[in-house]
Length: 110
Length: 114
Image (tube, rainbow over all chains, first blue to last red; front, side):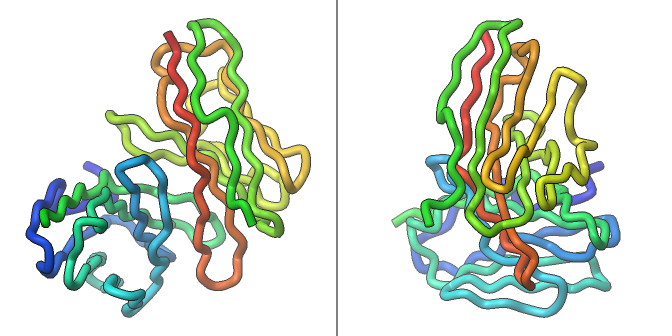
């Protein structure tokens, strides 16, 4: 069983819909990252969370340390949001090694 | 800043050949990471450096893989001898510890071993 699980694996939605991608992990962590991988393959770091909530534009990321769960939300989704979203955790304090989820492929239809 | 630079962008080689992938991190960053991405296994950390020193190489698959960081502006990942199962996209990323720990990824090197 993977230490980091994401759901759903694939998500197709209409433009304008509110999107939620979930990440659950089974280990203690010091931080959690959300990454975006574009169709062309480039990877961009979206958020790093150790508690609470962060917002950047239409993207919101939350984490519940007690429940070992994080969510990534996209408001007013747009076709350019189509990408693979990857959750990754840092398990050990002082070690920057990332353990990755398998990703969620999001497709936004105009 | 130009961002993280990787070369080559694409590499096709034959089994048994030596392959060297190169990375130039963002100036001022003190962490450098090498990742591998395949369809079967997704993204995996191979090794990372802090201030040019290897910190965690537990993801390096076997002795055929080696990584060096001779100075703050350059790192190499070498595979010798290469095998078809090494075919993957290899990403380099860099970061510095100042709260966000955001990692900046290079464009990747797509390696095909025939």
